[in-house]
View 1 (cartoon, rainbow, N blue to C red):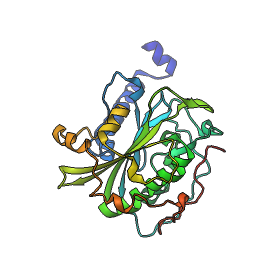
View 2: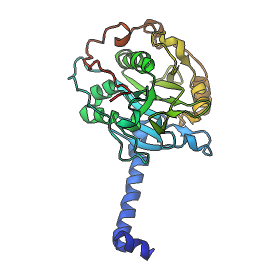
View 3: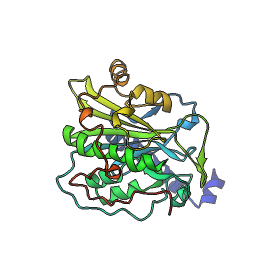
View 4: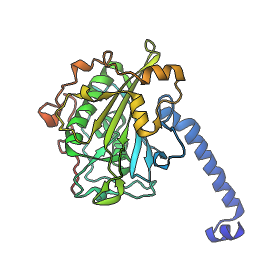
Length: 305
């Protein structure tokens, strides 16, 4: 121990101070900061013996990510949406994506270059910037918030669902919790431009709204494959939370009592969400028009420089 302290250039008193500060930081994160940014508990692994489901939790301004160093992807991202303001300033997109200094794999902008895949946001640029401001927007461009998405998914179908969740769902319900992430199935496939980044087969989104008439909460879930054309109706991809949990190895909303969780997570019911009114809504990149308050630049992030 003395050799280690000497090598690090620390006195015993300094080392003790570092340990105490580290413990205080961990307690603050685990007990106070993180629980307030996840509804009914952070996503948890169903089987701790599966390393590919392990994550490091990164708390950002406006969203939180569970990041897999082994897969080079966030396995889950969670954020809270509220009704958007009637008008908000347009915040320009940064020109590049940024490496997250907290990540061990050090994935950066160039890892996706010429890969054929978009740098797909999980916490969405527009919604986070609208609700949480410029600092939060810049954090959505950290590579720990990014997964490889096919262009027809990222620029069309996923874009449409992002518009719906803010413009329709958050506007109607006032507050909507979102959990989203990739699904990996079959063999491991990596980006041709970077072996550190695994390519997901599908992506999921789960919406949760506190509601006293539905066991205290109601849920809606989607799962979309990479192979979409982009013009499909959104309700074609409705699924159950149970199915997503089975495919991802994650347990969502672990603080919900088991009997209620079993009732809610095993059904598909879009009636209270008025899915029929927006399932065929066209997005900006499939012939539709942007929402009135949305002035986001039309250039979607691409897999090229």
